[in-house]
Amino acid sequence: MLRHICSLADERRLHAYLEASTHRSKELYARHGFVHVADKPLGDEEGAPVLKVMVRSPSSTAVGAAVEAQGAVEQAAAAAGQADSVETD
Image (cartoon, rainbow, N blue to C red; front, side, top):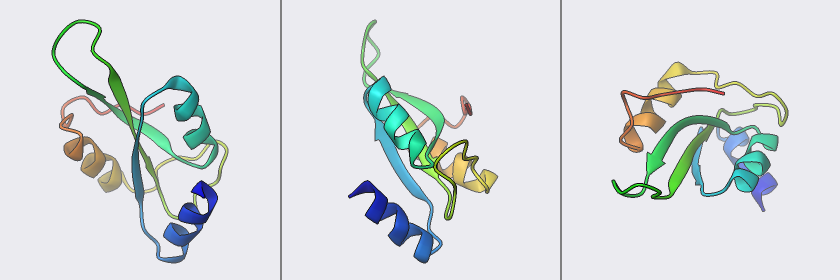
């Protein structure tokens, strides 16, 4: 299913956005070309879960993909409420 969605996004030249909740899911999405751009904490208390905000550029490769447009990174960070703490892996 993920492959199909990525293919549709490529055909339409769209960026894709998602939030990974575990290290394992982050690795899965990275294999499909998603890049970690920001963290999104779910609460202020210590130990609160942290979602990993990830974006994928159209036609990116599954291994070692980089976000092609800096605007996509900034949009994803803004959507996650983390505009001041964008990080890339």
